[in-house]
Structures are given as structure tokens and as C-alpha cells.
Image (cartoon, rainbow, N blue to C red; front, top):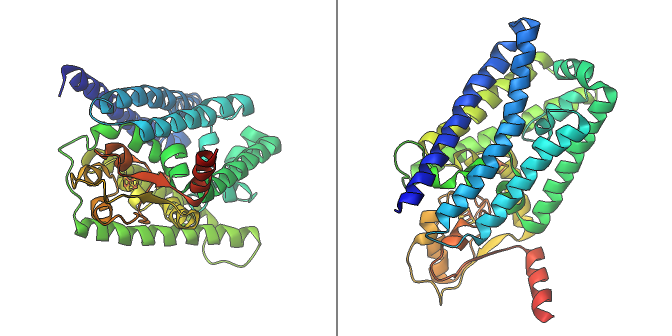
Length: 359
Ligand code: SF4
Ligand code: SF4
């Protein structure tokens, strides 16, 4: 490893550690202390949280993307990764910088993950919910309408885009929860220890977690839909809202960062409820990795590169396509392939490429 790569890896690690530590401190203060803090301190904490979530995060995404491309291009192609990172930078600039400035709302990031990932937008439609009560004085009806329109647009873009471009569209281009981090900090996972092969037993546990988490997310969604349609429901909606926040903080935010530190960047993607739904849309889109057995030299680079522990090599040796539900379409295997045997496609992309070949 060259001295330059070493230096860049160290900087990348420092940025990721800073991101994690700041998140622990500021999110801890924001979610745990703001409600009981004196007004001026509470305002300062909330302002810092927004500044961290929008500006610091965007600066980190841009800097880390540049470092990651520089590091990776020394050993392999970066065609797919460049597209991923360009997508994340544009996505961050829109969601974290331009939309908050234009709409005068620093919490647009709450509204970029479609159902069933979070029920926040549904809670905002229900005037008795504490989320509505806390945001109405700040945003008014116009502001609430604006974020709901923004949410509807994003959801449409994610679902339609996935039908055309596969799961790559959201998980490797737009996702500002875990997808961006998995890509912009890719060379430094895990932060502690070395990258290990994911054992079949671990995958089985993560798959159980995946169906459990999806069921939970659908139940929360169903609950708020019933509330909105004024159907009789069991349980207190305040408590249900709180339970969802605890689930988010523990099983999602904390676990996501734990995986960055000890497992791999895409750890959370193994059981993300939105990712699970998009995987089925990806199937409909015809998303797959095309292989070519006349080119494959059995070097195993694709399997080593895959963050979702998919066995690409066995398929490549037989010339069969890889169409695993776990595939996030990151294209790491495509870039890593020594003989350029692999390529990513969907039905729509296939039609486009045929048309351009015919011209
Ligand atoms: S699986 Fe979920 S967290 Fe991971 S990239 Fe996709 S949407 Fe984001
Ligand atoms: S098979 Fe693995 S490396 Fe290849 S695109 Fe899918 S998730 Fe990424």
C-alpha cells in the first residue's frame, strides 16, 4: 500500500469517527435533553443538530467521496462507484442544502425515505399526534403541505426509478441513511479489526431480522393508516409513536453505526425494511448482474468486493445471471472484476442499450 493511500485511509477513518462521535453527542442531546433544557440551550442544541445533519454531513460526503475514488482507482476500475458517489453528492446537496434553503425548513431529511421505512409523514397528517403538534408552530399549514408534497415527490421518484433502474437507484445513489455512508466510506469498513467473510449463520440471523423488521415497519404503517381513516385501534398512539422512535434509535441508528465499526458498511442494508420492499420492485425491473463464463478466470475478486456477501463467482463460472434479493446494485463486483466479465442491467437499461447499439 502506498504512503499516499495510507494517508488518505487515515483521513477517511478520522472523518467517519468524527461523524459517529458527533452523532452520538448531538443526537443524544437532541433526543434526550432538549425537552427538559432551558429554552436558549434547547434552541442551540437543535440548531447544532440541524447544522450537523445538513452542512457537516454534506461536507463529509463530498470530501469522503473524493478520497474514496482516489484510493480505489489505484487498484481497480471506479466506473460504477463514480456514478454512485455523484448520485449521493447531488442527493445530499438537494436534501440537505438547497431544499432547506428554498423551503426554509432544516428537517427535509425526515422526508426522504418512503414508507414503510418511517411513519413520520403519516403522523404529520394526523393533527392530534405529537409530531404534528411539535412542527405546526414552526412550519404552519403551508410548511407542512410543502414537506408532504416533497415527500410524495421523493417517494414517486424512488419507486418509479427502482422500476426502471433497479434497487441501485435508491440504495446506491439516493439513500442518505445508510447507502451513502456504505459508499462514501467504503474503503475503511470495518473501522475496528479486519473485514471478515460473512458466515452463512450470520446471514441466516440477518434474514430473520429482515423479515421481523419489515413486519414491524408494516404494522406501524398500518396502525397510522387506521388512525388516519378514524378506524378503531388498540393502543395509545402517543406510545406507538414513542416505540417507533426507540426502534429507530436502537435497532436502526445505533446498529447501523455498530456495523460500520465492527462489521461492514452495508450491515444495516441486510435488514432495512425499505430495502426489502425495493428488492421486490427490483425483481419486477429485471435487475441483475450479467455474467459471461467465457471470460471468468475464477479470481474471486467479485465475491471479495460484494458488501452483501453474494456468491457472484459461482454464477459467473456457469454464465448465469446474479439476481439475488440481497443485491443493492452497488456495482462493486462490476468494477472489481479482473476481466470485465460482469455488468449491471435491468429490462429498461437493456432496451436503452440495444437502441443505442442499433444507432
Ligand atoms: S437498504 Fe435501506 S438503508 Fe440500505 S441503502 Fe437501501 S434504503 Fe438505504
Ligand atoms: S452482487 Fe454484490 S457487489 Fe454486485 S452489485 Fe450486487 S450487492 Fe453490489
